[in-house]
Image (cartoon, rainbow, N blue to C red; front, side, top):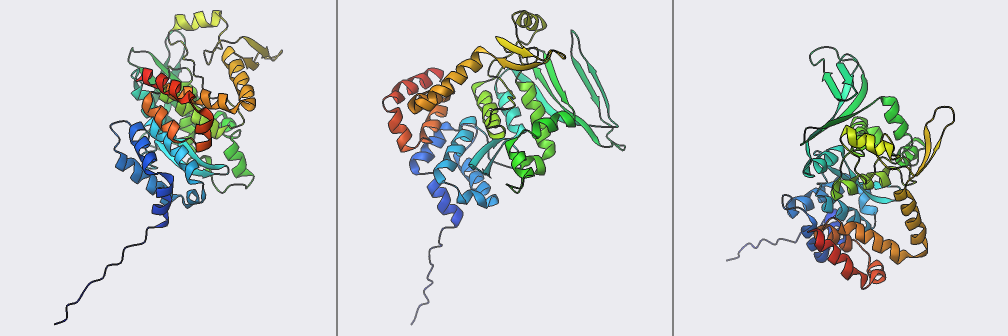
Length: 357
């Protein structure tokens, strides 16, 4: 009696699965698991990455190690690559894969800092009621015309409330937002036809809200994760260095602190201490600022061009401020050549990371 035998051929892995295996080796997977916060399961993070690759086929043409480097940045920040959540995105830019932080990701990191009880951004329509009060007590009152004809969007704002009761907000008109948009390298490339799309074209409202939040956050205390996320966005939007949308220096929050800072020569908007400033003779507007931190950053950049190892050490020191998981993710994203260049210096970097745990 003949028995029918079912022959099951092993399914060939898909293109995305093959690419995923090249993006994350077993060693890389361990580094990502260590970098992720406990509330994000590695399986979910990996699944979201796979979905991102399927939704953006151009990423499959990128260097897998460069993709991993960008993925590691988002893992260290504890952000999910999920277009529905809006925390973070992975896109294929002209220069390669690029990690981007959504405005909901910035909000998440701000809330996790421990100082913030509420933060959000919102659009304002022409038929809404909005009132702004300044002086010794800042207040923003927005009454949307929810069930009537709201008209066109006339502006956006971001609001933050700290656990100590202090509040701050940042309103911006479309013209103000568009001036920042027009300086974005990605948007310039889109307008010139060098790339087919940009978040400014496909998700303008989200980008407008993120612009308000970024401008507001430069006056707020920043956790290492939030500071890294803001720096990541600045580099992605403005690799040439302009405009600078945030500072790593936390601005004073109270009125008296602001007055003290101003008396010491601080910029009234960002809270940075201005050592040397050039002003327009007619308007009095600051047209160039040189702070101690900017001078140091410039000197470091110049030194890095002459000493690549020093540049890597400085980058590692910055990663170490986020603790061991953040540093491990940064180290895992380094190439063999970069690791060899750092050499024994990795020991002191790791020790510095452990001090932050």
